[in-house]
Image (tube, rainbow over the protein chains, first blue to last red):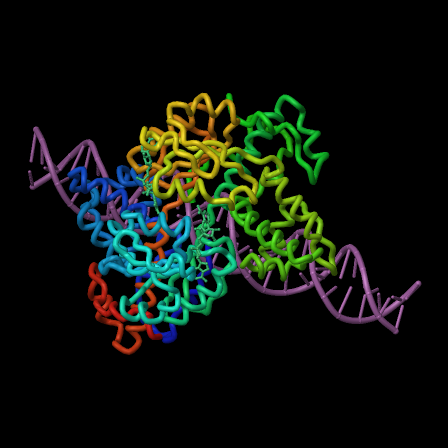
Length: 256
Length: 256
DNA sequence: AGGCGCTTGTGAAGAGGTGCACAAATCGCG
DNA sequence: CGCGATTTGTGCACCTCTTCACAAGCGCCT
Ligand SMILES: NC(=O)c1ccc[n+]([C@@H]2O[C@H](COP(=O)([O-])OP(=O)(O)OC[C@H]3O[C@@H](n4cnc5c(N)ncnc54)[C@H](O)[C@@H]3O)[C@@H](O)[C@H]2O)c1
Ligand SMILES: NC(=O)c1ccc[n+]([C@@H]2O[C@H](COP(=O)([O-])OP(=O)(O)OC[C@H]3O[C@@H](n4cnc5c(N)ncnc54)[C@H](O)[C@@H]3O)[C@@H](O)[C@H]2O)c1
């Protein structure tokens, strides 16, 4: 879902076990498990079965068990998993034992929302600095943080030990900003701008594009509409239009 | 990456070809191709090779060709793809020939940013209504739209033919809001709240959780730090700590 | 007209992920 | 102390997705 260049093995090709080397799909689900576990802990639950946790995380229980087995987690047969222990395990694997410092670049419409969001703090992150290129924005205070000019990035990155950069600038500025982040040593970037970033090997980029999400939903909406419209019609009109699909797409599923 | 329940075949199990039935992975990439194509079109390019488009979209060229072949797209061997034609094809497949109406529920911190974002309009969507439960927020005008009380949802959904619902409320309110959306006929939901939504079959839910994205980045950051720290150390200290990983995680990759 | 270089479309192999189904392990209870 | 109920961990088969490699097709140049 984004750019990842993790070669199969590190430099030394010997029998170094290294990290458990989780499947990427598992890594992507661990945070969801973690969130569900925190909910359970808040509810006072001390143990949870794979079935229960799977339901809370919205996945298949077999998948969950396999995921947890990958990180060598010790559940107890006949009982389930110890909630507190599992939270610790997952946080450890995800590297959340330390609170990572995040730098946010681009404090506009979206950047403001991100900067003002307190949900990051409770999930292992600390927004450590805000940057913008617009002099009018520099100096503004949001949630106790003062927006700094992007030229300060180099200095601040060192001071705050920035681990992750978040880009919320217009698309045109995203690549230069990414280059700047990489230049000061940031190796993880979360990009909200709708564009592809080119970064050197070893730097991870994840992208969030809301319009893409909507367009994927649109596809399914479109497909659902076609399916409900066809069975009565005959199904031949559609295959006859390879390029421009059927026109019966105005009522959609509203009123199903 | 979210909840999808699309059974293999529709009701009639006959030889109805129905829609091309694209692989889900392909569907997820089409919007990216579309964005890249629009950029090319703006640059005046009339044709593009799979290599060129793949680079612009950040994917492998073989993958791109296979994706496009799935939707029966006609490129020209020796030349490439006609940009304008391909844009039309993809928009048609994604159901973007009509501008879909989006309802946004929860006009808080994040909701404000979404409501004020003009990038949706250029990508096939129209934010048609804003809702909130807070009486203090109702009546506020954002970008020409007035925030309405969520109780009006039923009436407005019918009037505006809402196709997609976006949830930007606190997690606790997300499920009730989803239920309300489903009740008024919305079959596609984009959820920003960090929680699992339960919806009836036939309703598609996609989820965007920024904290999860950060946590995935954190994992890779953590892993990279371990890898650079180990080769010199020896590699045994780590396997001896199944639960609490190595402590050498303070310098990270900063200064690599 | 013919040949040459370029690019698409695709078969096939490989890699990765999913889910079933069941053996192994643990607890509680009689 | 043994037994049954329960739940984990995992081998295996299936499926989807990715990637390679190359034949087929197209346009251009001579
Ligand atoms: N607002 C949303 O809801 C939303 C939704 C989806 C995607 N996005 C994307 O997120 C990005 C930001 O959106 P927005 O609505 O906040 O835009 P915006 O114009 O409101 O904010 C962009 C900010 O980035 C700053 N900026 C520009 N160049 C910069 C640079 N080189 N260095 C540092 N800062 C710089 C600008 O001064 C501005 O403050 C855009 O790429 C947009 O497409 C936004
Ligand atoms: N702000 C961010 O950057 C950010 C980032 C990641 C995730 N999120 C998530 O997005 C959601 C919204 O975040 P936020 O920062 O905007 O929160 P917020 O509290 O600022 O806004 C929530 C809004 O939802 C409204 N609301 C509450 N219950 C409602 C209901 N039943 N019906 C309609 N509206 C209702 C509230 O009145 C409020 O206006 C949260 O779930 C949050 O975890 C936000």
